[in-house]
Structures are given as structure tokens and as C-alpha cells.
Length: 466
Image 1 (cartoon, one colour):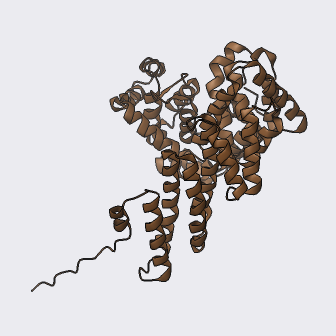
Image 2 (cartoon, rainbow, N blue to C red):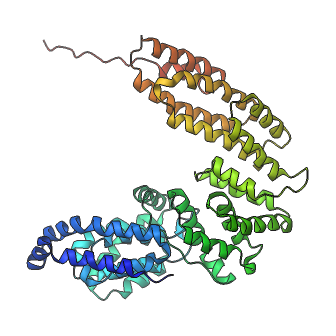
Image 3 (cartoon, one colour):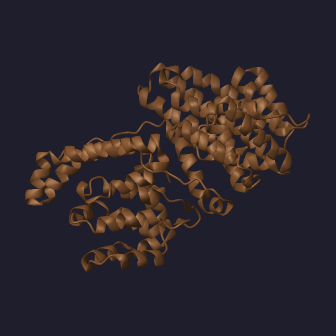
């Protein structure tokens, strides 16, 4: 973890000085009433939040030190409820058990600070469910030890009530975690430690990988962080380890590299392809996972991987796959030559193979784009596109692919039906005829389901009272 830059310390000091000049601050000191404390929170929270996200974007490895600087008494607990949420959601969980992989000591550090704050009574109303989630994701022993650290009996009693027994059940923990994940989805609060030894890598790997995934999802770029990552991956002491492989797969797809960095990462990528017998299959597993968690795989990511690959003979599956992606992206997935190229590639591999699944995901990526970006006035373009998707449906013969095409179609059709409401109008009738014929042909719906989709809902007339 890096020390906090002086410029951030100075900015935080300036915010503190600004707060001390506010009438709301003076009123709070005079009255110590919750109304004035909340007013102060409303003013200062956004200012601290802006600086917080500046640090998390520019210097994410300094974030823990910045969070510790927010714990000082002079700031009166401003922003701490939100920050407590960040400490809870930052921890990596086991998706089978919805429990932390590593205990979250920084969550404890922030929570203990809140519990010992003279403003605890004002803060407690803002942290209840956050504490419940953090406790639910932690082990019982860890929670008990945390509570025992608190000297104040009243606060200790409060914490015990937050250890809700319903979160012993997996489905309840999962529900609350998913709910919170949506709430924090667009916030950048991730940080990590770059290990310096193999034992450290084994311990910190889940956090480091999650950190890189989340910054990728949020579209955050940092040249200094890239340099540190490349240096880390090039360390020979990690060569061939599963952890290095996993981080390399993320790097080659999503990290913007300069020419010198491409040379280093390209050599490592190709050296591992030689040394590891199952390299291609392991790499494709990660690629499929990236699709599944909606990381931004696209023309640029495919082009970068292809630029790093060295061809390993005429039977090099991975190289041929990326050459196919180049053809798809350059000519477009509707081009007859592309459809034929996809067909030839696909039939030369087992239908359930990872590489064929990756090909299907590329085509699904284009389907997702039309569903989200095609405007309702261009529904004829949707009709035309479906002719091409029919061809891919026939090539792939894959039920999951068909279902995804149906799902994307329904997203767009719902937009159309919301826009074209005149059921006797030309547009509505044209959409109805196309959808009925196409969905029946592709077995997306049966006749009864289609009838219900376009059925006019009758409004019952009120019976006049005698």
C-alpha cells in the first residue's frame, strides 16, 4: 500500500477548514442535535466524495491511507457511512457460500472508529444494513472478536443486534449482497496490494484480480498502474503459476499497453503457450468468463490479443480463432464471406468446445448492440438483421444461443410496442406480422404465447348504480 500524496492531504485539509467555517458546523457544535449534523453531512459529503473518487481513480493503491485520513475526529465522521459500505463491498466473496475469502480487517478498523465516535448516535442510523451485511459475510468468530473490542456496553449491545440470524441462510445473504452491489455498482472504491513473493500472491490474488476486473468494468485507465502490473507479471518468480496466468489473461485483453510493454507481455504470453500444455483451453476458459461477467470484449481487445500472438503452426487453434475475429470485425458479421468463414471454423470444432462458445459470444455481442442501440424508427433494420441471425442459429444449433437471441429480440420488441400503440396502424401491423412469423419459425414462442403478446386488453366498463 502506497503513502498518500501530499496534494490529497492538502485538499482534505482545505475541505476540513471549509467545513469549520460553515454556519451548520457552528450550529452543530452549539446544539449537538441530529438535525444540524445531518445538514453538515449533506454539505460536506459530496465534497469528500469527489476527492475520494479522485484518489480512487488516480492513485488507487493509496486509497486505504486516504480512508484512514478520513477517520480523524476533526472531520466529525463525515462520509464514514458510505465509506463503511465500500469496505464491506470491497471484500472478495466465495460465490458458493457468500462468505469472505479473507477477513476484512479494514472493515473492522472503520466500524470500530464509528463505534468510538462521539457522533455514533447520529451515524448508527446510516449504517445498520451495512453492518448486517458485513457481519453476514464474515465468520461468527470474527464478528464476536470484533464486538468484544468495543468498550462501550450500549454500543456493544447495538452491534449484537446487527448480527441478524436470518443472514445465516445463504439465500438471505445472497439477496442482501446483490441488493448492495446494485447500490454501489457505479462507484470506484477498489484498491489492492501488489504481492512481492509467491506466498503473498497466493493470499492477495483474489483481491488483486477483483481490483483489475472492477477497474476494467468501470473503464478506469492508469498508466502508472499499468507499468506496475507489467513489471509484476514479468517477475520470473511467478512464471507459470495459475495466478500469473489469470492476471495475464486480463492484461492482454483489457490493459492498454505501449510498444515496450507489448513486447514484454507478448513474450510472456507466447512463452507460456510453449511451456503449458493446456494453455489454449485455460485461456479460453478465462475468455468465456469475461463474456459471462460482461467485461468489454470488443474489436479493440481482440485486435490487441492477435497482435501479441505468434502463430504456432498450421493447427494453431487460438491463432485461427483470433484471425476469425479480425475477419468478423473488419467485414461485419452480416457479410456472406464472414458467415461462410464462421461456418467453416465452427464445423471443424466440436459444438460444445470452448472455442466455439467464444465464437458464439462474438456474434451475441453484435446482437446485444442492436438490442440496446437500434432506434424504434429503424425496425425494418431489425427485420433484416433477423435474417442473418437465422443463419447463425442454423450454423450453431445451440439452444443457449437461440435463447439469447430471443432475449435480445424481446428487449427491442418491447420498445417497439411501447412506441407503436395504434393496433390498427401500419407500423404495428407490420411488426406483429413479422414477429408472429419469425418467432413461430424459430420456436421462440408458440401460437398461444404470440396471441397473448398482441392481445388487446379490454377495460371493463363501470356499471352505473341504479
